[in-house]
Amino acid sequence: MRLGFIVNPLAGAGGPLALKGSDGLGLNAAVGWAAARAALALKGLAGTGARLLTGSGAMGEAIAIAAGFAPTVVQKPKGYPTGADTTACVEACLAAGAQLIIFVGGDGTARDVLAAQPDVPVLGVPAGVKMHSSVFATSPGAAAAMLGKAMCGPLIDMVDAEVIDRDAAGDIRLYGTLKVLDLASRQAAKAARADADAALAGAIAEVAAMVRAAPLCLIGPGLTMHSLKMALAGKGTMLGVDVFAGGALLIENATQAQLLEQPGGALLVLGVVGGQGFLLGRGNQQLGPDVLARVQWPPIIIASAAKLAALPRPALLVDTGDAALDARLAGYVQVRTGSRQAMMMRIDAA
Image (cartoon, rainbow, N blue to C red; front, side):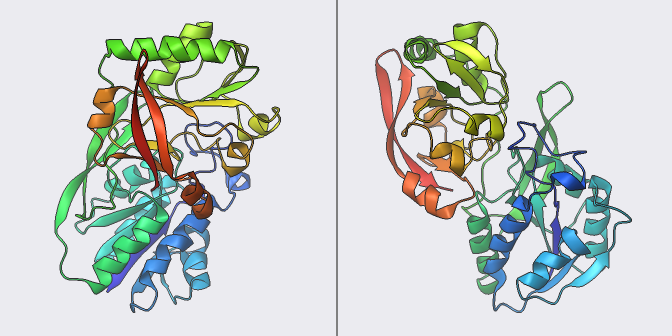
């Protein structure tokens, strides 16, 4: 079976830098995050006889060779790979007979794949800063399992999945759909908006009192977290991690390096990605394993009961990039849904 394999080598590089994506970062920003996640996904193809069609160097060739494959290079970018090169590589893979396109990146990469208008199914390996689209597996390990089923199992149905990204104004927008393998390990699309919830205001007020009493607190991204930040300081970023000291805003949109400079033992407050259930690993990559080792666990989690009930599976997902850490974080936690109201939810590795 011929498989297209395309890697955005800069995918995810913007996360630790508190950026909302990795477009335009340049060669010096590449940290190997995408390459490592691509290698994990390729484990699902071990021993299957799959033939990989790919781009040169960091676009897939080097990773495929390191994983034991002899890939066929079908596209060579003139410089360091761009989104246009991703589109061109997908087109070249299709022209060479690819029956499935595997791409490694985030929502921006998904849009570049969409631009090639592939007529075969695709599988996204999550490696970007934000992954709102439903074309991705929940984790590289889940992608490996899906590839193994696709190569060794019976025929798999295909479904249309949304390609979603934020536009220049920061609003979530549907750009189109791609055919994907209809397997359970695929993530759902992010919910476009959160419903107003009067009970949630009570939970936010209670947590705000806890944050004011804490010497140091890290508050994650999201609409619910932004409401908490506004209640505390009247400002704060919706899409980043902010640091509060005694309820006062200390650092807005903190980078991973800035978070590591803070004293240990900080309170951690997180929201839940609507429609997907992610707690860590989607839009908050600043909270990497080194940062998580220095904060209080479990975190304080706030989400509406309606959002939790609408999740595709009854669990909160974590995808930190460290499989052993993801396994250690698994267990039951309390999610505050209102004033003196809470639900018990299980944390699972994605």
